[in-house]
Length: 286
Ligand code: GDP
Image 1 (spheres, protein in one colour):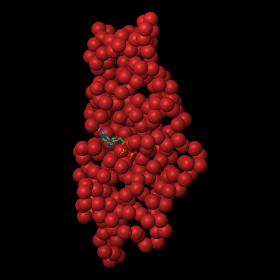
Image 2 (cartoon, rainbow, N blue to C red):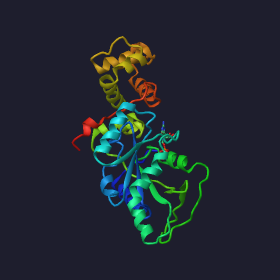
Image 3 (tube, rainbow, N blue to C red):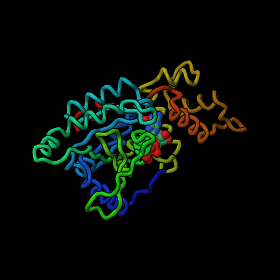
Image 4 (cartoon, protein in one colour):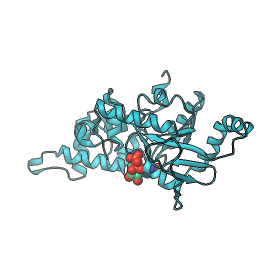
């Protein structure tokens, strides 16, 4: 699902998240491990500043392991709690509860000291579309989705999903918009499948992806497309891939759209292996 974001939609999304924040102790911010910065909402720090947060680098199964390690170190250096997970297969999910308990220990100790009955930690999953929010909620909820009913003082009914005894999630995630200002961010979102190809020019997305792969993963390109060497010129690379894969029209013309679709489909299906499209070095100063 790709939502077309307009200022009105952004304001509404923000309002909905702000309402949900009142109900919870901690935010789980879901990002794509392949593009942890480009898949964040640009205003996230401001929007959730009132709550502790854990950054969940999701789809880690699709990302370059070495780069994910660098990202985890990057967040650690900034004192931001972060975990790499694969919501689809359930990898890394156990750490979510233990880390939440650690981050909220002081708050819950204070509540206990005041004589407040112990309760489960309440959390909200938040992120841009397609980052894996529903997958994570379903995975954490397993089969025993328990509706614990409305909370007092809440006008709209919010359902809670139990995750073991110690954690409860709001069953509807907070959806925020991705960054739009930077064209490179758009290309990264499109390459990883976070936004529809039709939002940007298909061939331009592929030029970005091929240039990136040429620079960072040249061997994977050579192997995947059976090439002897990588041509300097990106159009020549396009042409060679097209010829290898039969994306040539009558008269010998290259079908660039077909080639683009093929390359992007293969990248997204991990046919070129696990890939990350940004590294912390680009963001060290931010
Ligand atoms: P939402 O819009 O944030 O709720 O995203 P969804 O939960 O609908 O997930 C979007 C797509 O990503 C779906 O096709 C999921 O199967 C896939 N997905 C979600 N999490 C993971 C993950 O950790 N690994 C992989 N490989 N795919 C995932």
